[in-house]
Length: 95
Image (cartoon, rainbow, N blue to C red; front, side, top):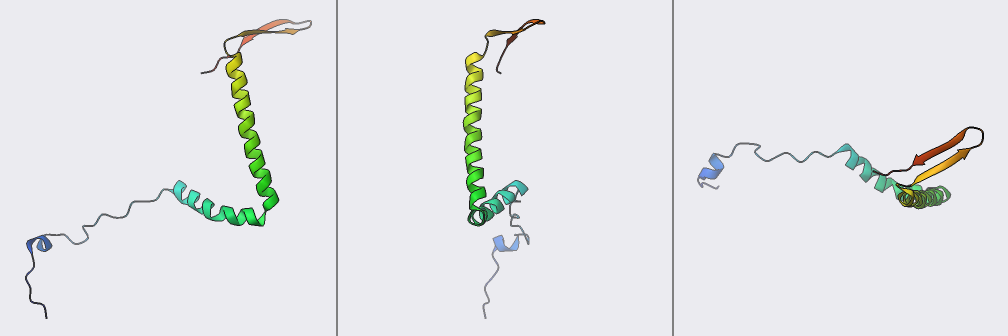
């Protein structure tokens, strides 16, 4: 049987002094679950997966095109003639 003495560091260490594990955010948990479920969804519904990816790429290309057009026309004064009503002047500004 061991009959050693207790050292001073063991004597003064409070019980349960270890820090609790860091809390997980709900968003991180949902992202993790989505990464787990995504391959199963892709294999189960391949046509829907291709359509979703195609739509995402198309939306990204369209948004870049719209932003590029707005930047190019930014600051110019444009006119729009409405027959019988008059002329409207407008300017597109970006922030």
